[in-house]
Structure formats: C-alpha cells, structure tokens
Image (cartoon, rainbow, N blue to C red):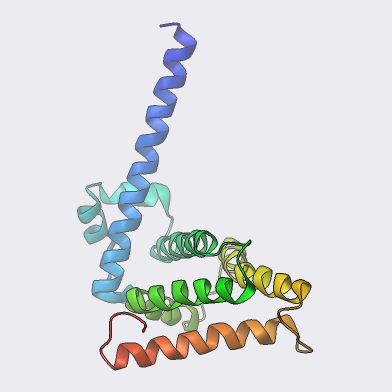
Length: 189
C-alpha cells in the first residue's frame, strides 16, 4: 500500500475514533443531564459513562455549559433531519403539514424531559450560541417551506405574517403534546 494511502487511511480511522468519542460523550452527557439535571450533573460521571477520562471531555468542551449546548444542538439537528425526511415536498400542502405535525407531536412526547431541560437552560439567562440559532432556524424553515408552497399552490390563503402561522402551528402542537402527556398517553391519536 503506498504511503499516501496509508496516511489517508490512518487519518480516516483517527477521525472516526474522534467522532465516535464525541458521540459517546454527547450521549452520556444527555443521559446524565436528564437524570441529574444540569446543576447536579458532574463531568466525572459523564466521562465514566462515556468511557473516557474526565480531561478528555475538556478537550472537546471548555465548560459544562458548552457540553450542554452541544447536546442541544445535536438534538435539534436530529429533529430537523427527521422533519425534513418526514415531509414529502411533492405531497399536498395538508399532507405535508400533517406529516410535520405527526413528527413534532411524536418527538415532543418522546423527548419531553429533554425539551423541559432545554427550556430551563434557556430561562436561566444563558445566551444561545449562534449555531444554536442557526439550527433552530433550519428546523422552523421546514414549516416555512410548506407554508410558502401552500400559498404558491393556492392551498392556503393568509393575510397574517409567516411568523404568526408558524407560532400557531408549533404552539398548538406543543400545547397538545403537554395535554397528551398529562393524560398518560404515549402517542398522539
């Protein structure tokens, strides 16, 4: 095997190991944050659960808050990807909205505890990082695209600004998910 190919292969393997380690850290952090809450969560416990040294976590993340923000970003990136996959842009407007609503309700019920933890973080006065804002914008852009296609197709008529339609859509789903959870249901009906 030529030396250049061996170096590339080692780099890929090294990169894969680094990425795998980061995924393990984020997974462990999410579990510990959910179990202990942000304030009581300890980096040592996260490291133990991830199978890494405590100092390794600080190589990836400077503070516990940076680690939590990375967990939140990973969460919203996954949700956005799922929303994009759930919606077929060729389907009718109302089928697209239904698919997005089903996706949102399911995740709001499944991940309720994590979302509540994130709300606590936001309410603590922690300023979201720019990449978090970008991630959230990508997520709501899924609705925005459906809404605009619906207007273009004549399926929707709206004199209201887009942000009002978006807030009504997501707000109604969030309220509905709380009601479903309070009633003890595990899935939307």
